[in-house]
Length: 516
Image (cartoon, rainbow, N blue to C red; front, side, top):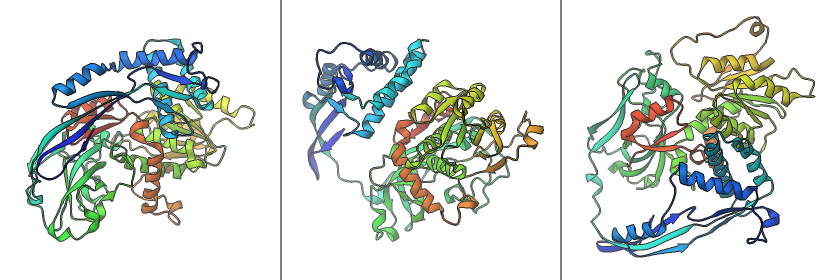
């Protein structure tokens, strides 16, 4: 990180600040140990934190050699490099968000480290993290900060009308194939606004289906987003520019727009726009300015959060309801987290259903009541309904797996008169193997198809898209999706690899860094 220490033309300098986390021992102190920072006997916490340091070193290759880093900075022209201690002492009372994130990372990292080695202690991690949170454990981490100063020559600012004249963007050219293409940019029109891209994220539902070529060729690309041809008759078909989760900063505005105080240079905005390094629009209303304090890396997930919020509103569980969320992909995890949290109004028993153990574990970390593989769901439901004199079935299911087996599981597990909310788009292919026999025929299920482009009919009297979008920002601020879901950031040039990783289930969420 750098902070400028000069202005104007000529020679300036800036301070270099390089924080190095986990550059020493990390300890967990339970309440009875807080007053005894030294001398207490090793505990389970010490054992687990020692394993966590193994995870950092062995799995993440995190072994910071502070003197070597300082020497490298000096060799690169940074003057007066000094390494200073910067310990963290994190408590739930004083640093609630950081404290929660750290306990989450300890649990996720340890579970992955132990499970990969078939270590039986992996089964104890969830209870250990719950214990840390229940007892208000204090986290003490030994970090180091490298500080220095570098001098440089500041060049005159580039005139606004001579910005880069080329755009690079992603093109879907055939099933399972994308490539980066470029084109010259026309001169900026008087009424246009230009933004430089920071991040764009891949939709692991709709967009992954587009990558696979699983779409109806006569279907509109979108019915409400102007950047995707809404109202212009544009339909799916290769080649295609696609994507709709884009964050950038304003770099230029046309002469006719320069009196608009909202459009100041450098302001961050979200835009429904395909993947690319440059975005232009003639409609200021297309820009959604980031609320104060929202990280741009989180902001690219606002469409996913709005989709999840829409599904949660459609489900609308009563307190005590058993709610199954089928498919712990990006949308499923967000739906589960929203229903489990309820914005402080919860009360539902949320069951995450997914065949992948790591996805179920992440759902538990996000606060669901329980998580089960599809084959284990019936047993899990028996445990949750024991003694309540009910049929033990789900009251509500939200199906977001995108797979016929997930739909079948939701239909089968939802009890008589229950509700099934379908949030998946299954593509243009027929759903093979779906069994709709006598039990389904007699079930009187309320089946609702939900899609985020419009407000559900039952909510239109009180909710508008603007109101829901505002609530989505509040939800995003609370969930911090890029952090909570461990989003991977990749260069746009690696887009082909990125889509393959999502398709193979090796990554949950991928964001393109459009500046790299």
